[in-house]
Image (cartoon, rainbow over all chains, first blue to last red; front, side, top):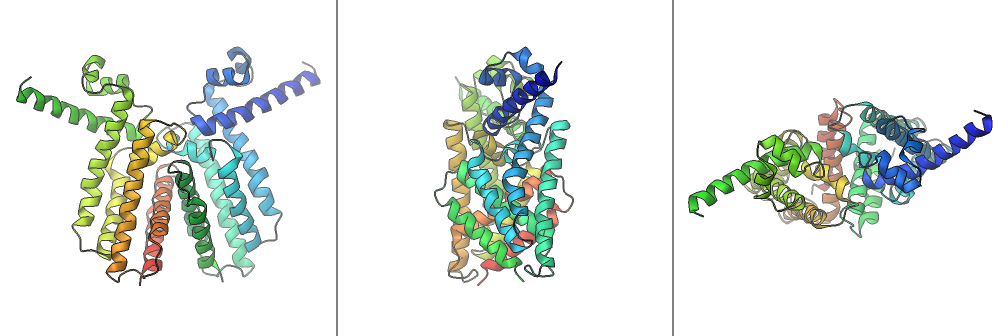
Amino acid sequence: VTALQVSKGDATRAAVLDRALNLASELGLEGLTIGVLAEKVGLSKSGLYAHFASKEQLQVDVLDTAKARFVDKVIQPALAQPRGLPRVVTLFERWLVWDDSELDGGCPWIAASSEYDDRPGPVRDVLVAHMEEILAFVARAASIAKDEGHFRADLDVEQFAYDYWGVVLAHHHYRRLLEAPTTRKRTETAIATLLERARA
Amino acid sequence: VTALQVSKGDATRAAVLDRALNLASELGLEGLTIGVLAEKVGLSKSGLYAHFASKEQLQVDVLDTAKARFVDKVIQPALAQPRGLPRVVTLFERWLVWDDSELDGGCPWIAASSEYDDRPGPVRDVLVAHMEEILAFVARAASIAKDEGHFRADLDVEQFAYDYWGVVLAHHHYRRLLEAPTTRKRTETAIATLLERARA
C-alpha cells in the first residue's frame, strides 16, 4: 500500500462519512445501514466494509464526524470571540444555524438521542460523551462570563446549560415536527430571557 | 357476531394496545412491527391483523392509546384542581410523573418526535395533532391563570407553553440519555423559575 493509496482511501472514507452524516440526520443512526449507504454513495457493500468494519463502527464514525463539524462551525467561531458574553452570544447564534441548516435532517445528536436512550452499547456511550462535552462547554462559557463580570456571580452555570439545552430542544421540535412559523421568534425570546436572567 | 364476541375482541384489542404502547415507548413507533408485537403478546401475526389492518394503523392506534392515557393521568387530575395556578402546578407535577414512570421507555410522543419529523404520512399527522393539542392545553391553562389574576396580564401564553415544552424535553433528555443524577433538581428549578416569571 503506497502513501497515495492510503490518502485516496482516506479521502473516500471522509466523503462517505459526510454523506452518511447527512443520511443519519434524516433517517436516524439506526436507519443508516451499510446497504442503504452503499446505494447512496454508489459503492458496493464489500467496498464499504473495507472502510467500516461494522454498522456500529460506521455509526460511531458518523458521530465523530458530526462532532468535528460542530467544533468547526459552532465552537471555533465562539472561541474566536472575546471571553464572556460575546462568546456566549456567538455560541448560541451559530448553534441555531447548525440546527436549522447544517444538515438536511437537523441536529444529528438530537435525532439520535431518542433512538439510543434505550439501547446500551458503544454508540450510546459515544453519543452521551459528546452531549456531556458540549453541555460542559456551555457551562464553561457561562463560567467565563461570570469571571468577566458579564454574568451574575451566583449564576448556577450547570442550570444555565440545562436551561439552554431545553431551548435548543424546543426549537428543534417546534421547527421540524410542528413546523410552527413562530419558532424563530419564540427561540429568540427564550434565549434573550435566559441571557437577561444570567446578566450581572 | 354476538355482543359478547365483540366485547371480547375489544378487550383483546385494548390489552394488545397497552402492550404495544409500552413497546413503542422503548423501541420507537417504527420499531413496533406486527411481527415483534405478535411475539410479545403471544398471538399469531394473522391474529393481530384481525385487529389492525396495517402497521400504520397500529401506530396511529398506539398514539391514540397514549393520548387517552395522558388525558386520564395528567389532564384530568389538572382539571380537577381549581382554575389558575393550582391547575398549572398539578399539570406540571403529573406531567413529570408521566415522563418518569408511566411507561418503561418514557414519553412516547418525545420518542416518536425524532422518528417522524422527516417522515410525512398519517402517523406524523396524528403525532403533530396530539402535540399541538397538548401545547394548546398548556397555553389555555396559563391563560386561565391570567384571568384569575395569578399570572401577569401581559404574559405571552404561547411563549409560556414553548418554554415549558423545553423544560419537559430537557428533563427527558437529561434523565433518560445522560442519566444525570441532578435531573430532578434541575427540572424543579427550571419549573419554579418559569412559574416565578409568569406570576402576577
